[in-house]
Length: 312
Image (cartoon, rainbow, N blue to C red; front, side):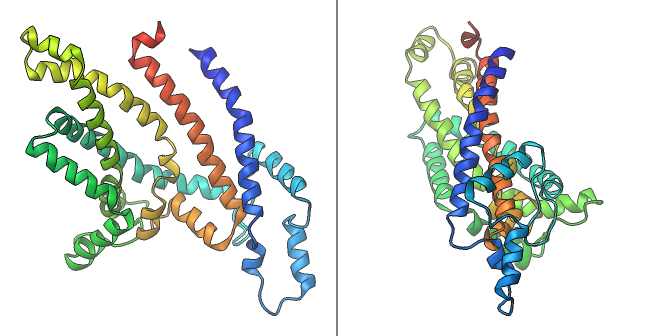
């Protein structure tokens, strides 16, 4: 097991280097950069040139990339061109804010999706199955920002039940939880429909297998068939889905965080994108790519743990 994990990690290194090169290249293909965003109309060309020299933007593309990659490998993510803040420090402050919002929301979504998917897959033509189909279809078709705006208006503004924006005081956990309610609900509604459809599809497929007919012939109850036979087989692919969702902990709430002004990685990335702050964009995108690779590895490991057949 450890040998396999180590081998996969070694294979991931060249992949991450290729991804970093592509991201770096795409950003530098843009007609503008962060210096263009901060220069003022009355600045002389000489001052603009000094700014470009200061941030290394006057160097050839490959030289810029190699210097940036060396610093990144050493753990130096650089500084924001807009506000001069250390990117590593900013991410260290914002990642926990995103995790405490996304992790509970995703965990709740998995539970809701599993329950609804099992119910809808067990009897897809029943009224419950049709209702679940409708709910998930509406959820998939509704943008998360629209859900957020509805919650802000009805529960925050009209009913005045919850705070509209921000995270509250970090020194008061209950205040943070109170500010979390609306973005938490938004993320649940955004996450669960797709996973519920996935579980429902897998459940329908399992009920069409021969072993279900055999179990019924031997007198097994529907409850026994569901919990002893169908559910374990359905949970296997769900486990891999959970592992592959690891990047959500960093970039999975960008729109929701922006709408609610939640001080997480999403708002940081969105602000950097608007201001063309390419060092921040590069750091967040490569961090997300790293989590994708780790998530896929985690999914394989979890699948091996929960399915003894793979270990053989």
